[in-house]
Length: 221
Ligand code: ITT
Image 1 (cartoon, rainbow, N blue to C red):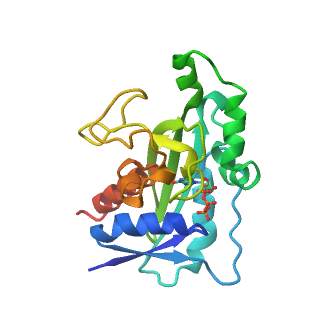
Image 2 (image 1 turned 120 degrees about the horizontal axis):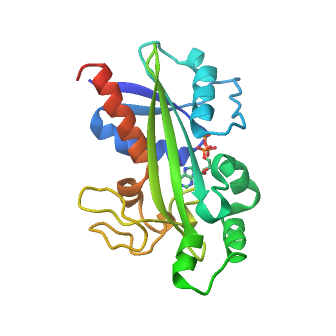
């Protein structure tokens, strides 16, 4: 039997990634955008607070009480910018865009390759929250990587055109930057690889897997 998950988000890229990942696991993901209801995203300090606020606002608008409600909040955290833009990622994408992040990092450029790699080190983080009708379950995912030198055209959304994920080891776990793994985009950004390749590395995949693992444990599966 397929379980319906209503995904509250205005971001079609997120929906496509969640559908692609969760369909084979037996979940039908449908985008939820309740008519005439404005869901506000609070300016909070953590992704978890933002996700919880969206669940609280949306749970009364679920089409059926038997269905599940999903929200997910993500952000790009750049080490050399003290984790900026982080929880401000949506605002920064709308205003500075990807090219603005590159300009900020260019001010910090170093001739030393080791220092230069540190300057560009970054990660995506995602918190997925699921309302199952009685409680909220949280899943977390991190994707370490680095910021490219140029914006690449191609697939993906948001900061994908400037984010290069770290290689993965044989267990699918990310390696420290600079190490070669069994799975690699060979320096290509998320924007330059297809959705399936992004999925192997992505913070979203990891957050959703974490969530589904807990959901199944709660259901005794
Ligand atoms: P919601 O309606 O779900 O909130 P959003 O696009 O505002 O959609 P977030 O607040 O979670 O999503 O994301 C903050 C910003 O980070 C936003 O500009 C996204 O485009 C970007 N972002 C999130 N996940 C990303 C990913 O996997 N790749 C690239 N950029 C991403």
